[in-house]
Image 1 (cartoon, rainbow, N blue to C red):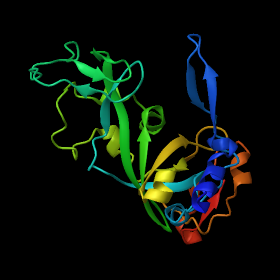
Image 2 (image 1 turned 180 degrees about the horizontal axis):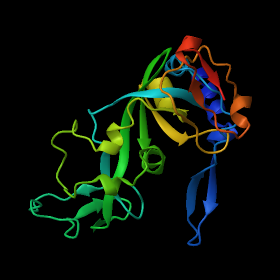
Image 3 (image 1 turned 60 degrees about the horizontal axis):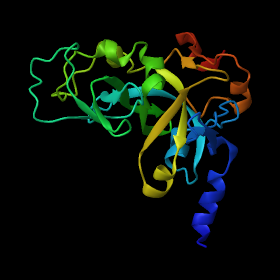
Length: 250
C-alpha cells in the first residue's frame, strides 16, 4: 500500500469524478461520467491551477491570449462514436470532395468507414493577472465559444493541414475575449506534469459565463463560488477613464 496511491484513489472516489455503470439493452456495460456540479466548483487563479497537486475540477476566469498553432484546430472523427479515425493509405485523395469521402479506420467500429467529419480540438493559451496556462477544448464545448460547427469552417480537404497558423476567422476572433471555463485537473496534470488542461464546460452558475471585456484583475475580484451559484450571468464591465480603469462586477 503506497500512501500516494491510496491518497489518489480516495480523491478519485469523490462524487464529481465517479463513473456509473449503465446497463445497455444488449446487456453490455457502458461507462457514463456523472454530471459535474459546476455551481460548487471552486474558482481558482491560473497560478493555483498550475500549482495544483490534487485531482479535481475548478473554474477559471481568463482571457484568450493566443491560439496554439503547434496543433491543428480539428481532427477527423467517426460520426457514430466521435472518436479519432485513421485515414487509410495508398489512396489518391488529391481530387476528393466532401461528397467523395476517403476510407478511414475506426477502431471502435472495427471497420473501414466513410462516415467521418471534422471535430474541434482547439488548443488555447489563456491568461489572468497571475499567469498563463494551456487549455484544450473539444467538440461541443469548443463549438459553444466558436459559434459554428467545425464542419462549417472546414475547407473540404482530407489532406493534413500544411500551415496550422492559417486559421478560420471564427477562431482567430476568439483572441482577446474572456470566459469562465470549467477545467479538469487530471492525474496526468498532477502526477505526469502535463501542462494542458481540458475544458469540460463554458460555464456560469447555470450554463454559460461570458465576460465581455478582456482586461481585468483576478486578485481584485471579490468572486466566490456562491456568486457563481446564483445562476446569474457574471460580467465584467469597465468603468470610464475618470474611474481610473477600475472594474466592477455586475
